[in-house]
Length: 277
Ligand SMILES: C[S@@+](CC[C@H](N)C(=O)[O-])C[C@H]1O[C@@H](n2cnc3c(N)ncnc32)[C@H](O)[C@@H]1O
Image (cartoon, rainbow, N blue to C red; front, side, top):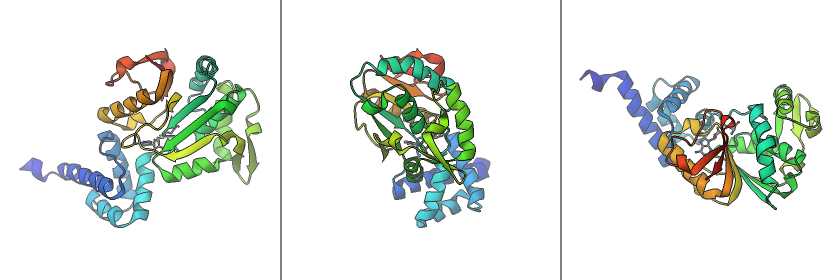
């Protein structure tokens, strides 16, 4: 009896109902996200929306698409950085670029690109290595606001100062300021960096593969998924990558314990850079 009436049990039921309601109404599928992470995000949302219970939050977002869009910002964690983990980008420059140079044309998929910082980092690195002109980048995410921001390519100067340090640590070859124009506290990035970039809505939870690619970067996205959804994502990556294609992940992510563990081999293990076996 105690178990049936516990507040915690109620929250679990309400959380499942909220996630189901979001899926049925808006087709965003959070059903296979890691439980702990989604719980934390929803608890945070309760205080932001001043809702006493998850059921109250469900009622709000079900009847108000604007409120849902606000909740989506909290659920998707649109946090990024340029040249995040500089040693990772240095390893891409040193170990991956020579492999990319062997292809006459290159397609890169940046899955979960958020507000675009990773896309601009990759584009800058490829330009410095003479590869940008023969590369097409597909930058995808489920959050339309993040994709809009990514397309604009405008970032706060305060953040760009930290990115400058990352860029240098990542083996940057020029002055970082060459890539943007500063105005009113913002850095407006060079539009030509994104000439061959397509920003698009794509969910690793519900959508399928759309192109063959030589490199996939999916960083700091899989940590929010449970094993079943991670397996789905690795399956998509395997299907999309060409023979011996390259997969790069975030610092806490690995294919090792997934259903596809044997189908990716490490290229630079400590930097989470893998190759299709
Ligand atoms: C923490 S950000 C990572 C941004 C960037 N990759 C980086 O490492 O800096 C996680 C991103 O994954 C996106 N995301 C979450 N679920 C997704 C899904 N099912 N399919 C594609 N992207 C998803 C979120 O919208 C968010 O922009």
